[in-house]
Amino acid sequence: MKTYGDLVSEARRMARGISADDLSAKLKAGEKVVVLDVREPEEFAQARIPGAINLPRGLLEMEVGAHAFEPDSFIVCNCGGGGRSALAARTLLEMGYTNVASLAGGMKAWINKGFRLEA
Image 1 (cartoon, helix red, strand yellow):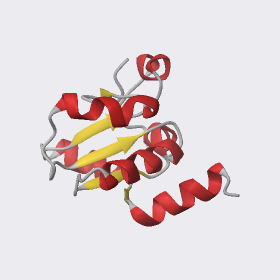
Image 2: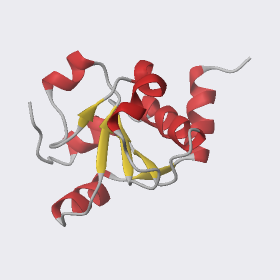
Image 3: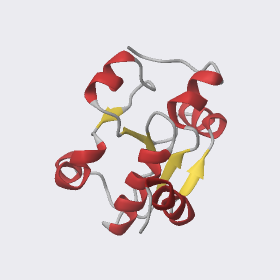
Image 4: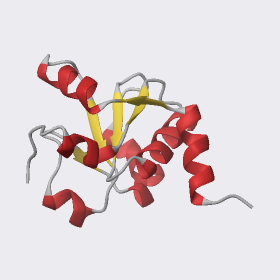
């Protein structure tokens, strides 16, 4: 039987990670990055990475198509600590998206670096 931790570890092996520093640099450079925040709406409303789109992990498979992302769009999944985003990134890869990453350390890492937030 697998635990949540086992599933997250497997997902992290399948989907690449991106550091808060690297994501911030890409956003500052104006690179086209979709920041997909998979936290719950209440979490998202408190603080988020500027420009992030909220799509809760529990609705991802059903609603990602409504956003009409190109299959090769650079999508960075984000959550509170990096677990849900790793699972979401793996799911997007399984659905056929080819350029997906998970923000290593999630919002905790982003906030610890002192990067800008929206509320």
